[in-house]
Length: 329
Figure (tube, one colour):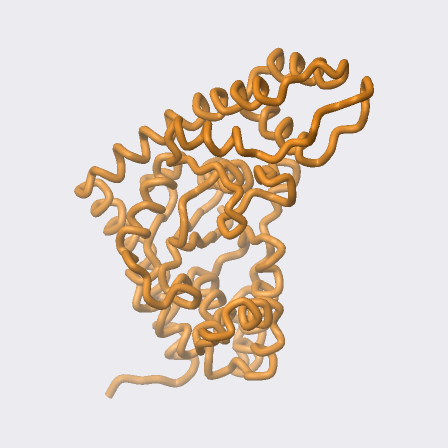
């Protein structure tokens, strides 16, 4: 089975976009590949260097992914900072990463614009840490979004450079994992773009019924159709896109027919949509709350994941040290 690796930053709760965009596919992937999933708490410090509750954030994210179906008995699920080998490989790879190429990465330039008062070294060498995460397990496939494609290419570059510098064929060059048609894009409630944490337009798996209803009722809509079968504006398309996923087909067809004959009442549509979203989310929400309250189980999962992940991590670092020339006296 091919090794597939994916990282999760503990900087916010999972929303419907995360669930349908990646997590649902991760659950399927774990049964078809040798899958590694890690919570990237080191990475989170590049943008949140003084988190109010880093451990709490990690605990929440771990609870959410377990509730969504990631199985610690099947996949390797671990916390990045539980593997000291990652920090060592990161250091060793940094010796062969050059300032100019790191400064030219799109993600670094974007972050410099967004957080001009916090341009730290970790931000600059983010692609190197990402490469260490990937290469430490000799991962073949990495699911990445558009914003991380260049960083994955950097990981390929660092792997190839290491092999060339030391005249070995040690690291393979990881490639993107493509979900293809299985990747569903969930739009935000503000009428523009996709659902995201930073945009403030998300419906989170942990949201209670009251919060879901409040968010959906505030979703952007227009004044309503004035002609039969007229084209829908984007904000209405977005709401129907979400409805297609969480509502019964008869319900969606009913409101689409009302839209096309100009009789739709957006208030009624959004009330029904909020109810359907809550019906979909509530079983997951209950699992999240149950798992999050079980400290013993979470500790067991984290320890088991760290042990499994360190097997390959320790082997890789040992071999890399030998290739470079480190020897014990």
